[in-house]
Amino acid sequence: MALPKAAGLLALSLALLCPLGGGGAWAQEPAAHQDPVKVGPPPPTVVSPPSVAAGQGPDAEAVDVTLSPECRVPGSKLYTLARLGAVKAALKEKRPVRVLAIGASTMGLGSSATYPVKLETALERSLPDVDVVVESRGLQGEIASGAGERLRSMVAEVEPDLVIWQVGSHDALARVDLDAFGTALDETVQWIKGHEIDVVLVSPVYTASLASDDYYTSLVRKVQEVALREGVPLVQRYEAMRYLARRNDKGEGHLLGSQFRLNDLGLRCMAEHVTRAITLSLLQPDPASTGSAGRPALTLAPPKDSAGTKLPAAVPAGP
Image 1 (cartoon, rainbow, N blue to C red):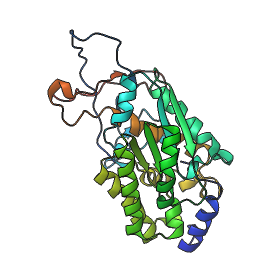
Image 2 (image 1 turned 180 degrees about the horizontal axis):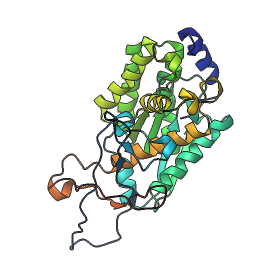
Image 3 (image 1 turned 90 degrees about the horizontal axis):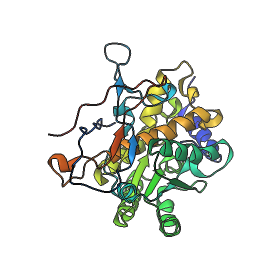
Image 4 (image 1 turned 90 degrees about the vertical axis):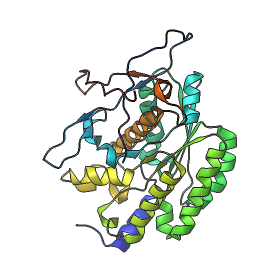
């Protein structure tokens, strides 16, 4: 039985003392084509182009079968995509991709200490020829405005190509004014982008006890609005967890342990979901490019299902 709103927020606040874990268009695979006049080493490989499998029932959405069966979510409920120019540059230059992860599940306490490891492993599996280094930083109870101030020094220290920001959970507990939250998030994302660093936002966690809390759901929408306005990828953790909860007899207990903390499966799914959003965003063409020049400068490896069988390739994008 769902907890009342106040009890849900209290339980979530206790959970954040020991941190939490962790829609979009499908990208399409470019046609197999290589310009004969180009020389030099081949571009990095990104595994894998998106593939979908039909869901159950007449109104069911297709799910992304490149994810683990327990973590499969339709793309429209999992991510929105945008270019990741800094990460793409690192791939082209064949240098390590440095990732700074901040937010609730990055504080390195308890089971959540495994999240950065899971994320780094998932990213290196999807970018098999690339060294990915994930630096995780988090501060208990930190709201968006405070993280924005700390990011200046963290960026100078880590020099990341990408910042993955799980944002909103602590702001919700503190009942931060929604406009103030949106402004702080907007300004910090702009600052990060202004330093030629990519950003991926991750929305707050879903629980049935907070699903009817208007403030909480408004804050989730605020994160979506900022991601759209600033043109950065968004991992829709709230929507993805709600989808998975409704498909399991345990509800959100499928992914959550006690006090709203993500369990091991929840952490693994979150790492996969973040990785998938990054991988597909890397396939987005440069906005100023047209024709064949607009295709992503990355080689795609065919995906495999859990049995190791190759899945059909996607339809070539563009002319």
